[in-house]
Length: 288
Image 1: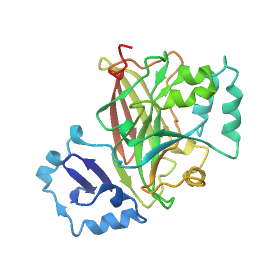
Image 2: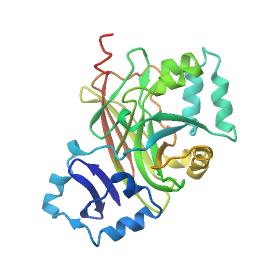
Image 3: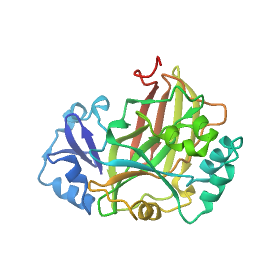
């Protein structure tokens, strides 16, 4: 089932039916057995007439599927990501860092964003004007409740300034953390069954309505399990409202490709849907 945080309210889509859930988002999602709870709500909540579903759930009125949660991210969990990080950091001498962390016992985890810096479906994400090499990173993203239990999944776009991180690995926070440097959506896919390895992740980038990049892969290529990543994140951190964890990028555009203003990024994951974002430069900093 899919849970949408929309301007019209919280909407639950179960098979072909849609229901209105009248509960605060943060309380609703932060529970164990979220799937079972939502299933029970289908028996007591208002059901939307099928002919009116499009009015309630319009692409342009979908909000980010988060409230007071933080977004964290895991790095170098796919071989593709390791190779890209090593390639971009050759001149700085830091390539071996990424090679070692890929095989290390402890994963790379880093803070990504608070809710105010996260874009939703059909919203803008920013590229840094002080970076010559900017790319989107498609990531299957976990929702983990305050007890450390995975309850749902969404699509994440972990925007990355590769030239900044490649210059010096210690610049990672600047390469990763800035206004609208992340996007989540379009929904929270709720399932008690873990996402299987054959789940396909796709990314397409369009420029002037023409496709300039497209690739896909499967979740099975990830090196670490979701429970392993979760256990490290929760080992010394508390999240009273739960949190979102991006599990690492599995698709990386080739060297020489960089995003431009008005590019369109479409990230699709089986069972969840498609997250669409437009590339922009923060207007507050554009002229500086």
